[in-house]
Length: 283
Image (cartoon, rainbow, N blue to C red):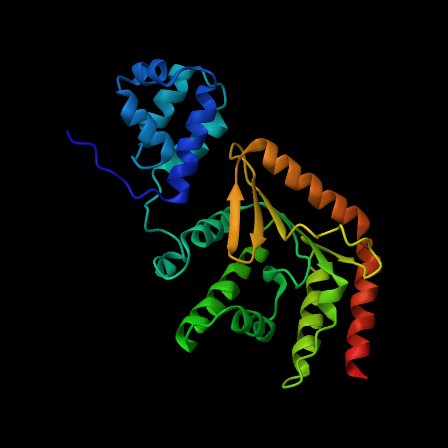
């Protein structure tokens, strides 16, 4: 029977990466022999270009001596997930592949930590604010801009199921003026204040007086998932974002986020400052 090649979706790549972590220092050839596979097939499964079934996940884990039934079942279920599942599927081919991967991981995260050095983080942006940001960043036509706006709004649905969102907002992001529509920042401020009332959202403001080193290396997002999935870190840049599961890099970026959070105002003081800025905008 010919093995069908699968589209290397981010979910299948993460399934393969978890199998790779489970085999640890064992040589790929030895691991392949356990399942009666050739080394090429194992390599492609671990890269996500070949599909692996839930039964194969369980059998492989058993042969490797993995003692983690909940983790094995989580990976087995993920292996069976159809490639065309998820609200993001219609965006396939219309947005960058890295962004689509990130959107899928973001939708499955349990904890998200995010900071941006210049703007309000995307998950907390109001529709009008999103339109301004996307319109400035893109030279695309109105149809594409509308699609990008809808995508960012759809991503915000994760807020209702996250265990926690910890966001650090730069105070500088609270001062922009949109002369054609002064109400944009008022609506955005209300959006942030309303978010602080949600039990699973913590917002800190990084004050203008903080040292410029905080946040100077770009926007950082870290994603944590249910067991056994590895955490992911992402850094935004002018040409888009790049994410990684590499443990040392994730730990480094998580540490950078914590330094920024420690320099930011506590949650209660941040909420008061947001209210002060809203009052300023009404004068």
